[in-house]
Image 1 (spheres, rainbow, N blue to C red):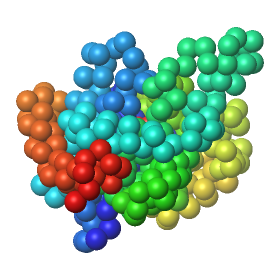
Image 2 (image 1 turned 30 degrees about the vertical axis):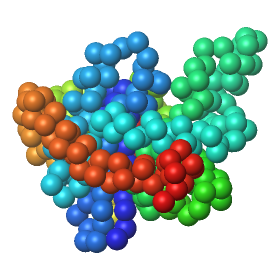
Image 3 (image 1 turned 180 degrees about the horizontal axis):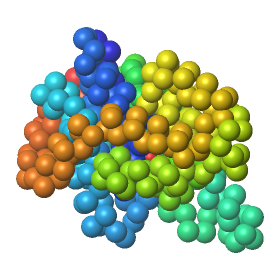
Image 4 (image 1 turned 180 degrees about the vertical axis):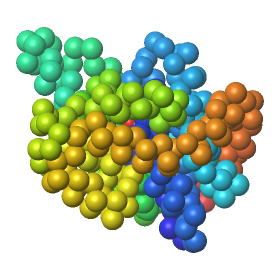
Length: 334
Ligand code: TYM
């Protein structure tokens, strides 16, 4: 049985990038026969990004859970849980920390970006960098390795983290025996990185996101604000580097995409192209939006679902952690 696992950090409102990079592929994967699926809310990771904003983490947890459920995830079929409901995960994080080279973590993109920024500004390299940020990849490795996932569906930005999880798993296996499966990233080819309103990667940190379940009017307004070049109606447009085109491609079929490419060549006005994009996205999202709105108004139901999911996850995590405690010598070996 193929085990598929992924998480979303509870640090903001889910956007189209999370949808095409994580939510949509996971809901699809969960409908495949012979797969076992683990989907979770990475709330410990959220403390790293948004330390000092508990209300935001709470709100985001609710929003991301409601998103997954509204998009069709069946909590009876998959294991759907909140990271912080599984105390075995921080425990495994420590076991993995002890086999992880510090040099490996020095090379993590997110940590290096902070160091490079400080260096460029002439401040201390680690200024404002928490140990949490530095340890981020180890916590993520624990998420993945706890359930021995084979495949991790993610956007391109997470590839390095999955490679690190492999490295960490291999180090542990080398020292203590073959306990962990080496995970692989699973990336959807036509949506590897969804651009945001300004053409850069859609990301909470760039403030260029389109919230997944924003009301229809707002969705339209946001799409009308996507950055385009200044080519006039009638002038042929280039699909190359067009954020609008890439967004369309992530939602449309191959034929629809080819038709828009033709319209670009024929000089479609940007306003018309945006309208086409808006209608295509809304067609996919609208049916789920109602379910989402209802779920958001029922936090008790979501909480119950998450508790049940945690129980299910722990039927695996608890005995596996016991086995690992034996393996490293914390408990007498059987
Ligand atoms: P996070 O919360 O930043 O993003 C959640 C998922 O959405 C994908 N994504 C995108 N995909 C395409 N285009 C975009 N513009 C875009 N923006 C975000 C991300 O690649 C991701 O798949 N560290 C992870 C959460 C995590 C995790 C894990 C994931 C914690 N533990 C274990 C997998 C396995 C993160 O911060 O994702």
